[in-house]
Amino acid sequence: MRKDLIGINPTASSFKIILDKVKHHAKQIQVELSGELENKHPTFPVSLIRLYKPADKELFPLRNPTPLAVPPVEQSEDKKISKVIQERRLRGKNQREYLVRYRNPVHEDGWLAESEIPNSDKLFKRFRHERRPKA
Image (tube, rainbow, N blue to C red; front, side):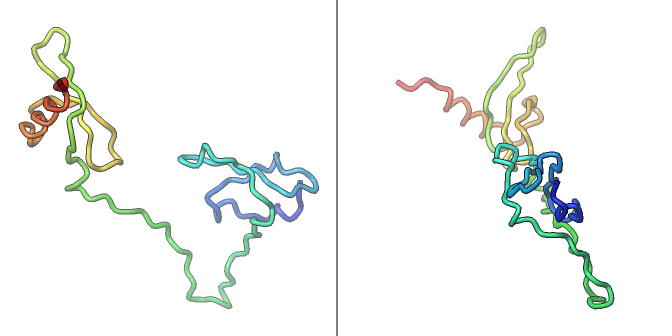
């Protein structure tokens, strides 16, 4: 294991360094990637890694750690339906549910009853028009 990697602060970076994969005289390290970066190659050159040094409070008394910014999600826009994708009939009931796609990509597609869909006339008209076989 490389001695100069020991003092790295794991919270200063968004990636966890896998120290088991760092070998003696290695020129690269392996990191643990998650989320959308999971499919990327997890090996990086050691030259990109910097030793973590906390700020000196005496030299920089006004310096505060930067808080992580979280993008705000607007409540009014988050559940607007963009289109109806599919329909299904519930077993033993004379009721239909519709698979809807939301405008906000944070929300996954979901099944709703017709009464739960606002502006259903316009959305159903477009849905049935798209399903109609083309001549």
